[in-house]
Image 1 (cartoon, rainbow, N blue to C red):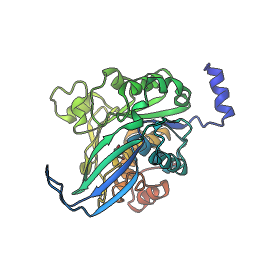
Image 2: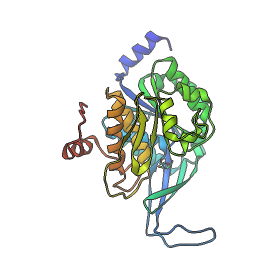
Image 3: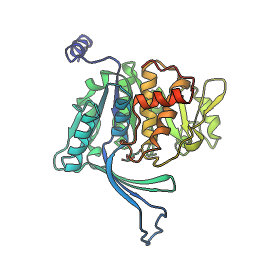
Image 4: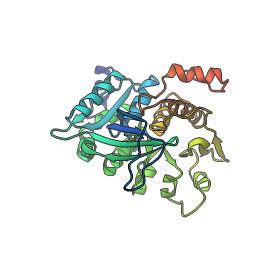
Length: 321
Ligand code: RIB
């Protein structure tokens, strides 16, 4: 599409230039809560079961939409009941679903999640998410170009995410990478990213890590590399020093989707003009509030709840959105 055609298209479709894009997975989460994890060959009795909406891409998109952002989700779903429910739910949450491609005769992604001792372990079977390939991205490039910031993660093929990062780079669109679940990826993807959000394990895969201490790696990439560390909060370098923004003090019920909430809310804050530090403070609050409720998406906070928390706790954060 030529530039003027693109502008015309935006006008015709009444598309907001500040739209957020998420390219990623849609899963159905099959969740068991237990006090004791089974050892190999052992059966234990759990205490709660639920089937809920998940997938890192869908989670991030819902996090953005709940905070009031106009959000495109670029994803592949199956044609099974789980996928149909997931798409209907995304629509109810206000996520734009017209770039979700349903793959015929294919099941959607499934995540088998065990929650124990305030933590989780997850097995993902990608299903239709594997169809989110380079050809899909080529077909939906205009939906990426509608956005001012785009996020991506690794529950879909890495070469598709690499192409997204190139489109963003070439069109002056901010790109936020969460290289999770961890896998090998080209350095170009890191270089094309405006922000890279990692945890303590993923930071070891960053170029220049070379067995350094994680905080020294952060110093190499000021205002770009961000490390989350669970209850210790988040770390980044502002170019002068490494700054820690502590996690908020809450009673944790379920950490599933907290990282996705963090990324989505960070994008919303950056897209609304907050600087990196304030955007991280905002994201930290949103992710913390998420952990107080069960379910990746069902537990995500809405903007009013976040603002209420900021006010009640006298946090110095000027939210104008
Ligand atoms: O990040 C949490 C998500 O990871 C879950 O919702 C699950 O679907 C897995 O993809």
